[in-house]
Amino acid sequence: MEVDLSGLVHARANGVAATYKGVDISYRGLRALIDQARRVVAAGTGAVDLVVGKSPEAIALVAACWVEGRPFLLPPSDLGAEARSALRAQAGCRQVVHADLTIKDIQTGKDIPPVKDVQDAVGTPELDGVGPMLTTSGSTGLPKVVPLPRAAVDRFTEWAAAAFGIGAGSVVFNHAPLNFDLCLLDVWTTLRAGGHVVLAEPDRALDGRALARAFTSADVEVVQAVPLFFRQLLDATDAVFPAVRELVHTGDAMPPGLLARLPERFPHARIRNIYGCTETNDSFVHDTDPTAGTPVPIGRPIDGVHARLDGAELLVSTPFQAERYLDAARADRWVEQDGRVWFRTGDLVRQTPDGVFHLDGRADFQVKVRGVRTNVRQVEEALLNHPDVTEAIVLALPDDEAGYRLHALVRPVGEARPNSLTLRSHCARLLPRTAVPSAVELIGAEFPRTSTGKVDRKKLLAERV
Amino acid sequence: MDADRITEITRYVVAEFAPDVRPDELDPDFDLLDSGVVDSLGLLRLIAWLGERHDLPVDELDLDPAEFRSVRAIDAFVESALLKGATP
Image (tube, rainbow over all chains, first blue to last red; front, top):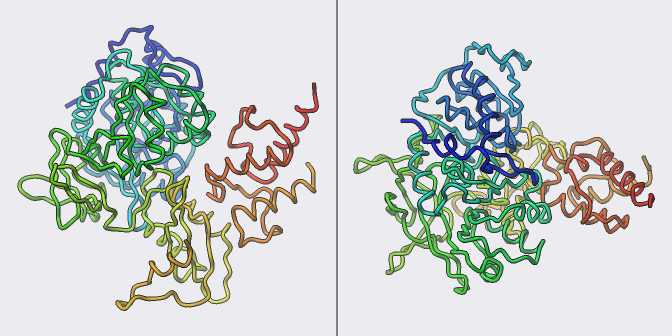
């Protein structure tokens, strides 16, 4: 089954497809870019690794992969080089294509002419029907590759277009980087429908003035973003946004104080919380009450989504899900039961008598750092990889701006005294930048232990907050 | 390039983002962004500090994160911003 991009193909040529850095690009212009990209994409076979930031060219390249039916790997653009090359091998990518359509041979790292394919010895995983391969934080070593079936993406964009009224000409804001699942709504649902996507610049996604400038470059009707975005926007400008009719906050807990400020600035917006993850895409939705003053519930399952509890842990099965990680060895989060594949979210929830689900915390070691799911165990693994480190514990300290910041406690080997520059550079080679600790503290003594012999993280944390 | 300013920027970066590091251990060409030492929120703090310290209208300047990649790059940014300010 192919992804329905009819809106993109049939949209009025003069209609605006995207706005980037204040410049509009028409559907005619975007289709021309896609045609160029298709020539490169069609010349190869198998999976392709896309090295793209965010730009009309980057979007055209991804669209070309959709159209040509090629599976594409889309890791964070700031993922460390070693991790990226390991993921590339895992996904069996035989080609690397950059947004400017240069192609690198993955054996030699040199540009090769666009018409030739790279033959090499990397394995070829089963990728029938797979479109995007996004990544998500793993507990050990590498990020996990999430292969999303094209049919699942198609079901998602169909749902999202209806749920948020996204059609031809709808103006939708995109805040997230292109490798985030959130773009399946902001970018791909919009283009599929022949709408107009307004792109934030990812490099400046935390610069309130740049965000406000991007946000006001068109009359945005639909916006989906993490709470941090709304705070940056509201702090950067006093403007009111009457054109916004759908405001979606997602990815992180919405602070009640910030929520209370939204109705005045977005007087006509229906405000909703969406809960989901890369593996399953959106699964719960809730009409947010800005006056409640309490944590926002995740709400109820979206139509077609099944939810169940194992103890307090939420399991979901969605029409939009991946059903596996690419690395079959990491299957523990996927469970087959009652003829369905369920995903263990790791989120602890409770259901109130009105049927609404509330989030109570995590069953594992994951936290959100600047809106990005980050597993502190993975950061510890990376630190332990360094020859000067014998033991490492990473604490997530609450932070007003970032949500959490990572504080690493490191016991060095012998007389070694690695400093934080060395250790953070080391982490940056292996992990996305949000997973690089903000601080590294060298510890001389043994870590405190609980009665069961585990490192007493609570005690270490209590000493530092 | 201004040696005093380099020293001052180095001291600030170390104090703010890597307190365990001595100023003389931070190479002026060390990549602060790729290493994750200065993250996107840290960058905003750094820019605000530069604006205050050198009386630069950072709110009005169009800033590219690459201009703050290293201590030396930051120094060059300040120098060019001061020059622009001096020209009427």
